[in-house]
Amino acid sequence: MQLLFVADLHYALKQFDWMTAQAAKYDAVVIGGDLLDISAALEVEIQIVVMEKYFERLCRDTVLIVSSGNHDGDRRTEGNESVAGWLREAKAPRVFVDGDSVDLGDALITVCPWWDGPVSRGEVEAQIDRDAMKAKSSGKRRWIWIHHAPPDRSPVSWTGRKYGGDEFLVNWIQRYQPDAVMSGHIHNAPFYEGGSWVDRLGRTWVFNPGRQIGPRPTSLTLDLNAMTMAWESLEGRDLRYLEGSMDRGAPSSPVPSGVA
Image 1 (cartoon, rainbow, N blue to C red):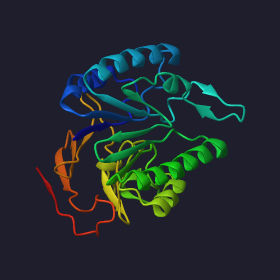
Image 2 (image 1 turned 90 degrees about the vertical axis):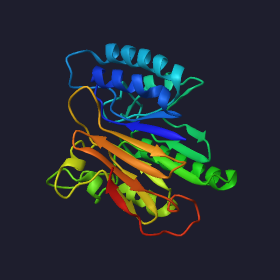
Image 3 (image 1 turned 45 degrees about the vertical axis):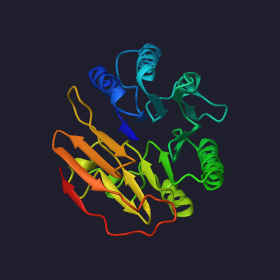
């Protein structure tokens, strides 16, 4: 069981092409937010139409899981909070989006939307609380969150000058102790001194692949059979062994690391 994770493509179509070409190799492709680029000259409505075409192509070859980021909002709620309504409308039999929980092998994946204020933040917390009960009652061995912003005060949220993560996410991780959280948002965290693509908060692994220019995005490959996470970028490939530490209820153990 292998998952390909990318984030922060920001309408870089060559990177979407690369991802589409890889899709059939994986049991699921996961996009962790910021598919669109609200600073681009091209209207958001046109970008959305193009994204929907990519969704159609991707789900022919694999399961597609997509969460929203801060660039993906296309409308505002009555409380004036940004939401990616287009993404929820793109939900299909093999396309899972904001608010969904996905059973994939022996893992439960919680797809968190970008929150833009107290109402949407409360909705995310309620979603996590519901899935906590589901993870417990279903007997799933692993619980994974997709959440665009990484946790605050972690190398995966280091901007080079300060931490730019989500402090509420830190509290949720401490309370619910998922096995892994896969994020994006802070583009250069893996490339700065003091930053990283991987960290661990208690028993929870947290990941951020970062962002790079060029035809290939930075990416993470989670292998739930071999229990490894691989990060690939222009700097090369780095591997972490997760054996034991992502089995729910299993004790934590020292985790070796290395470059493959």
